Each structure stands twice: as C-alpha cells, then as structure tokens.
Amino acid sequence: MSLNDVLTRIDAAMPEATERLLELLRIPSISTDPDYADACQQAADWLVADLQSIGIDAEKRKTPKHPMVVGHAGQDAPEGAPHLLFYGHYDVQPVDPLPLWTRDPFDPAVEQTPKGEVIRGRGTSDDKGQLMTFVEACRAWKEVHGTLPCRITFFFEGEEESGSPSLVPFMQENAEELRADIALICDTGLFQSKTPAIVTMLRGMVSEEVTITGPDKDLHSGFFGGIAANPIRVLAGALASLHDETGRVTLPGFYDGIPDLAPEVRAQWEGLGFDHARFLGDVGLSRPAGEDGRMPLEMIWSRPTAEVNGIWGGYTGSGFKTVLPSQASAKISFRLVEGQDPDRIRDAFRAHVKAALPADCSAAFTAHGNSRAGIMDISHPAFEAARAALSDEWPEDAAYVGCGGSIPIAGHFGEILGMTAMLIGFGKDDDAIHSPNEKYDVESFHKGTRSWARILDALSKAGG
Image (cartoon, rainbow, N blue to C red; front, side, top):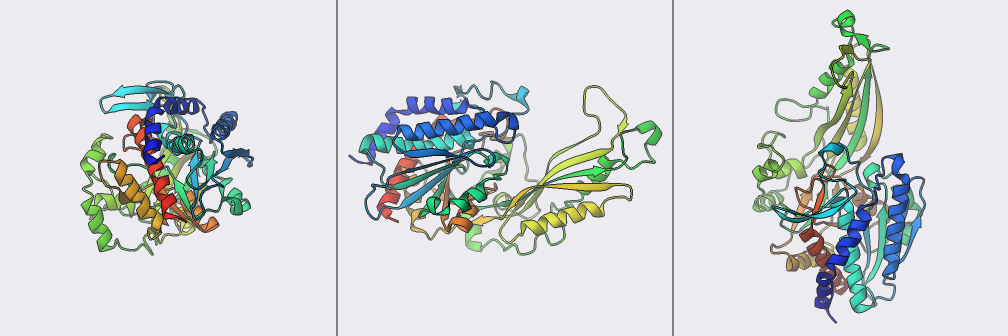
C-alpha cells in the first residue's frame, strides 16, 4: 500500500468527511461569550470522541476556562520517524450582526455558488474546517495502513478567539508531553486563493480598550453643549491623530527597531504577482490606504498598523436623543512586526491618549493581550519537504509567504517548547472569517486533506 491508496481513500470518503465537519460546525462553540461555555465543552467532547474513533489516545483536559483536547498516536511508528505536533482551535467568533447572515450560522450546509461549492457556517474556515483536514488525512492513513506514518500529538484549543488566557500556563505545565520535533498549524490560507503557501512571518499584536469619562452623567446638549467637555469629541481627536497625512503611525518610537525589507525578499514578493486591485475589489474597495511609498504586500506582511476596531458612546438607539455623553469608548489594535516591543507600544498609546485629555476628562484602559511578531526558520528540512508535497497536490508550486495576521501560538511553540512552527492553511481571501456568511470551499477541504496526507508522507520519509 502507498500514498496513492491514502489519497484514493480520501477521495472516496469525502461525503462522510463533509458530514462529520457539518456535525462539528453545528456546535456553537463561541469562546468569548459565557453563555456558550457548555457548547465549548460539547465541541471538545466531540473532538475527543472523533479522535478516539480512529484509535488515537485522546482526552479532554481542564483549564480555568475552556478545555484543551490532547491526543497521542503513532508510538509504533518506524524508528527515526519524526514526532509532529498538530495544533488547531475548535472555538469560533461571535456571529453578530446576525441579520447579515443568509442562513443560521450554526445550521451549516453545502451551497452552490458562482465560484463553486462552499460549506457555509461559522467556523467553517476559522478553524474547524482547517482542523478537520488534518484529522481526515490521519483517518485515511489509519484506514489504509492500520497506523500513522510517524508519531503525532494532537493539540486543540478552545480559547483562541478570546485571547487564549489558559494557553501559556497549560503549555508550561505540560511542556514535556507536548514537545515534538516540529509544530504544524493549520489556520492560514492560500496565497491569492490559489497558490499553496507556507507562512514564514506573522505580525504580533497589542489590543487595547479605552474609555474617556467627562461629566458624571449624560447631559442635555442644549443646556451643556459648548461649555461641557464631550468625551466622544476628545476620543475622536485622540484616535484621528494616531496617523499623519502619509499613513504613518504617530506614536513616538513606533517604528524603532524595525528592519528594512531585505532586497531578496522584496524581489520574491514582487515575483508573486499580487493583484491588490482584485484583493481590495473583493471587499468593495479600490486602492491601498496604508503608508505612502510601500508596496501592497509590504503593507500587510511586514509593516505595523494601528486600527480602530470599534467605537461607541452616547445614544445609538432608534430615533434621536440630543445627549452629551458621560463616556466614550473604543477598541484599538496594533499589528506589530519584527523588532517591536508590545509593552512599549501599549505604553506609547496610553501616553498619546492621556496627552489629548482636557482637564475635566479622564481615561481608563483595559489590556486585551499582546504578542510579538514571529519569524520562522525555514532552514529546517521539514519546510522544503512540505513545500514539495504541497506543490505535488496543487496546480501552482507552493510559496513561502508572510501573513498580516497574528497567531501567538506559533511564538509560544518556540519560546516554551523550543519548537519550530510551520503554518499551512487552505483558506481563501473571500472566506469571510470573523464576518457574516463565513465559508470554506469544498475544494479547500478536499485538497487540504489530500495535502496533509502528502505532507505526512514527506515528513515521515525526511525523518526527525
């Protein structure tokens, strides 16, 4: 029996694999909302049972919040075969605004679209569908060969979409059990929705919430407007001044320590032929809005950002209320690149807001986590083995790319477990992750599963 037998099995079993994914997607495992705590437990239980059904020694592990799922298999693999750790997360984002969904987010279905068949529902692409591509590849290996080609540890988290508060303590307490030769993460996507990609750099992140308080109660804008400080105006001014007219962030020291893009990296990125007009056009935009003088891929992969993610205050209900609010609030995130210190960025932002306060206003801050940017070491032989395997499955050769997102777990694997992380995913640009009508292409699910089978074969032959 060979790899081709495994691939044939994957092809034949896709209807059953899709139904298993739909079953997992029906569980509303929203980690950030306490009302869905039981659903997170249910999702963890489902994964444990599914892993056990293919002979993997899996169990649910308690944390202060949502459980981890840990499983082990392949202890009987040939001598010299590598030990792989595969990470994914079973929790999902909230579904608001619900009226914008075309169907119940937790009643997933396969739909026909002008771009082909998709699986529609919350968590399809981020990250349940991606997670299950690896599980289904392992299922096919077990069914064909009776065992896996190498030792594998499965590590599924239930708090990734809510800041992962339990992750670092759990990894520190279970470091010996989790440590492997390399970590695999399936939470990224195809480059331009068609080229298989291995992510070699990730941006870090700082997330802040700020509330400006002025008067001790909401005021009548006719009686107090003009004489009383308006927290919304104060907050809007502080946020607007985060950028200058060229798109650069104005915080002192924000760009300190950031390396210039190496000429050879710039040349490689230019050779990818990134179509920024199509990328923006898919979301109703037409032109880059970042720093002047930077190429589009540079803006989203290797330059830092400051973005306002939400802002509120005063009366926002139906009709109109001429109120001067007591408070105004906003959520702000900074995407960081190599060389930036998250703590320094947070301190600089808070100082910026405080400097904008008039005498009668105060500011309160809430930190929502931070992480440094990550750079992957592609000199590890597993990277070239995986890139070749991906290239064998897809019409286009696989590429090493950057990623504008932040996946802190990749850094934790290095810092806590001393492991290199390899990020491979099969999402597409229009998957609408974190948004209404999230989807995962049936092709991505199918070819992603086949890709992991090829990668398992390649890595097992490359050795540890």
